[in-house]
Image 1 (cartoon, helix red, strand yellow):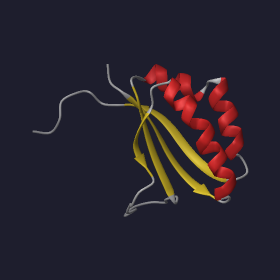
Image 2 (image 1 turned 45 degrees about the horizontal axis):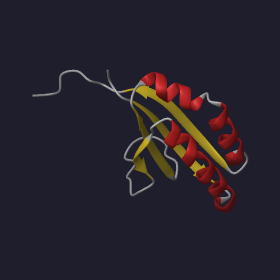
Image 3 (image 1 turned 120 degrees about the horizontal axis):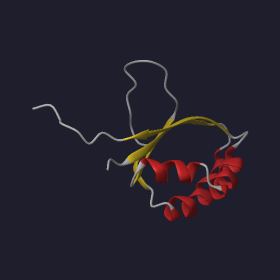
Length: 101
């Protein structure tokens, strides 16, 4: 079964308030077994629009990634970042098939 990912792109307008969200989401991500693959870091955006912060979280499967996002615990954490950031987030299933040779 392929893993699943949250891919988020975020612009933070109030870093101090956003840190409350970061602190609150730690327990939620731990509960659902999420692992940061990308958390900020250097990047290049050679095509299209970009945001200042990029995050990729890995989950054991698609159902777990969805359950985490739709959980009451994450809803409470997410409410802490509202008004302090603009985010785009997708939940996507990983690929577990053949690779280029």
